Image 1 (cartoon, rainbow, N blue to C red):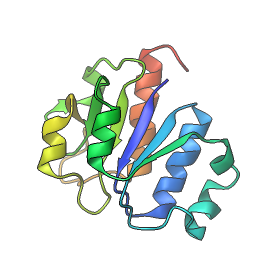
Image 2 (image 1 turned 30 degrees about the vertical axis):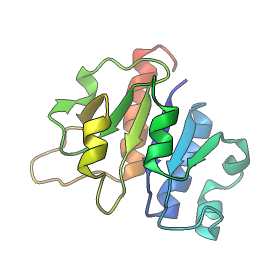
Image 3 (image 1 turned 90 degrees about the horizontal axis):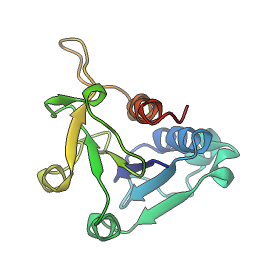
Length: 149
């Protein structure tokens, strides 16, 4: 129903946790390469466990190839730089929830090409959440709004 996309992820353990998240909630994981690790990395396999075989994962060799596939889809960027909160946005089935690199987010061109940019509000002086937690929070809200939980 919903897709989670990771833009050039850096940390295999975070990607693996998101694989498990997607598997448990029937979401598709889309990975935009290049990654900071190989997709057959043993750290990814260790955390993903048997969920790796139960998940729908699509990889794209570049952001441009991802955009071609997403031409008629709403891509919602989750970023600490957004003004609008995720819980005041109306998610729709088939939305793609896009998360940036753990080390540096996404470049400006990605911000500019997204349908909407949203943030998870944090207390003052908190920088950001772990990407897996942010994906879980956002996916949970999207599923709740659409009566999928």
